[in-house]
Image (cartoon, rainbow, N blue to C red; front, side, top):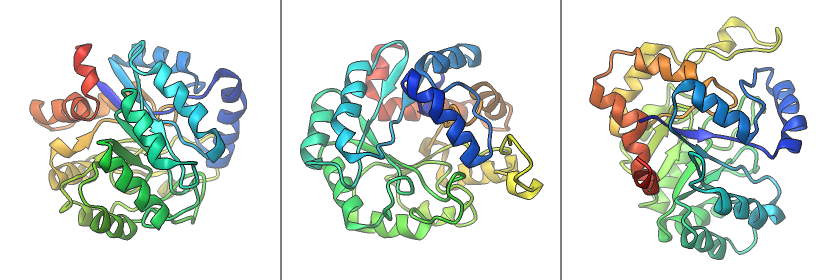
Length: 283
């Protein structure tokens, strides 16, 4: 079984404009059109059984409508949805309880897109409420390719947040901190923190000559394996950030690494099944 724990989709009409805009901002290639149909086609080609779709809420008044989509689509056609929340979303505790009551297992936050530090009191309240409702939290961590120089979720900020919040299950996307990987080892002592592999291995696929060869580099295999050893394979989740990385290529890259079968199973599906228990109903 393979579960991609970190994907994104847009409604068809929004995808038509959002994907080109985001490619231009990031100077990087999208590997699908960003729609649900395109994700399912990519999964079939990559041999991926299930994907977790993570909505990012940038307009707080739309929180309930976006989460309604997650609730209605959750568990259908190989896709499991998390909810989304914004620091300025209305009645956050009520909304998180609604998500939990409707079978949603977690939420996605994005400090850079949502313009607040992860250790800001508004995010701390979200983390507290998520813990109270038994919801896992996926956060973008580190830099963001589309917002160079913007810092809202550094390793130090994550540590400060974790020290204050306690037992929330927090998944720091992009192997703990995109382009901040030299500092990520400091997070390993927090046993309630996991990382995912999204958009972290190999290199960026550019659409133009904006980046230098050094800027295109992500984690080399030996660097990735070092982080797996530091965190333990039981705290690493396979995720691609589709459409921003190729599901098939990343799956094959990790499959060909010198990891034990148990380590690969942890990364590819065992850890994700703990985060999304309803997957067990399907296989």
